[in-house]
Length: 476
Image (tube, rainbow, N blue to C red):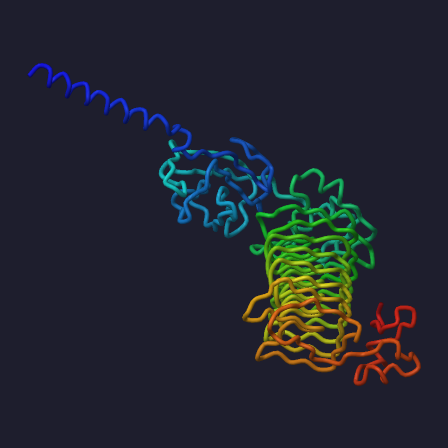
C-alpha cells in the first residue's frame, strides 16, 4: 500500500515537473507586447518633449504585430479638454499604428498619449502595463516673410527656404517666389524630409506664383504616410503657377506627387517637375498623385516613377473629375500593379484629357498604355510614343495598348496617335488596344503637319519640331 502511494506520488511529481518545463520553454518576452518607440514625423518623441508641430503624425511602433481590430479606446490622445478625435492606420507589417488627428492640434497645448494594458497583440500578446507619454505643441508661427501682407494685391514675398516653410501655417494667403530655392539644408534637419504645405485638415487654398523660379532639393521619405508632395492638398480656389521642381527625391505611401499629393480642386498652371518618385502605394504621379477636380494646364514632368501599386502615371496617378490640358510627361513608369500610363494611370468617367502626350516607357502587370492605363473618361488630341511591357500572362486577359491600356464602357477617344515603330511586349489573351492612328513619323512635313496629324490644331496648340521628328506644344 505504501509502495503504491509512493509510486503515485512520484508519477504526479514527474507530470508537474514536465508541465513546468513546458511553460518555461516559452520565454515570457514571446508572450508580451512592448512599445518600441513613438515618433512624430519619424523623429523620436520622448516624454515631456516640447515644440511639437500641430500637424504632426504620430507613429507607435510595437515589438510584435498588433491586433487588426485595435480600437481608439485602446489608444487615446487627449488634452485638457478631453479626447482628441483621430484616425488610426496599421502599417503594412502590422507592427506600427499611425495616428492622425481629425484637426490640427492647438498651439502651446499639452497632450497625453495613452495605451491601455491588455491583449493588443495579433496573437493575443499582452501589453503588461499602461503606457503614457506627454508632450507640448509649439508656439504659433509668425508670418515673417520678406515683404507683402498676404493679400492677392500684395502677396507675401518668399526669398528663403525658411520662409517657404512658413507657408504651411498660413495656407489661405497669397505668395510670390522671388528667386530659386534649395530645400536640402532644411530637409536634412528632419529624418522624413520636407513636410508638405497643406493637408486634409487644412488644405492650401491661397495662390502661389513661382514666377518661373526653381525649387531644388525636395526630399521626402515617408513610406507609412500618404498625401505628400511640395504641397499636400490643394483645394477651393487655390492656385499654383509658374514653378519648377528640379531633381526631387520622393519615397512615399500613396496619393502623392512631386508638386501636389491631392488636388481636391483649384488650378495648377505652368508647373514642371524632374527627378524620381517611388511609392509602396497607389495614385502616384510625377506632378500630382490624385486629381479629384480642378484643372492642370501647360504642365510637364520628367520624373521617373516606380510604384508597388495601381493607378500610376508620368504626370498624374488618378484623375476623377478633373481636366488636364496641353501637358506632357517624359519619364518612365514602372509598377508591379495595374492601371499604369505614361501620362495618367486612370482617367475616370468625369475627367477629360486633351492636347497632351507622353514619351516614356511603361511597365505594368496589366492595363498598361503609352498614355493612359485605364480610360473611363474622355481623351482627345493626344499621342504616346513610349514602349509598353505587360508582365502578367493571365488567362482572363491583361490588357495593353499603344495609347490606352484598357478602354472602359464610358471611355471615349478621338484624334490620338502613336508611332508605327512602337513595341508592345505582351503575352496575354486580350486583344491589344490600338485605338488611334499609327503614323510613320519619317513622313512628317513641318510645312504641312496636318497631312500626318489630321484634325490637330497647329494654329494655337501644337507645333512641328523637326529636331525631335515629332510635334510639341507651342508653350514649350
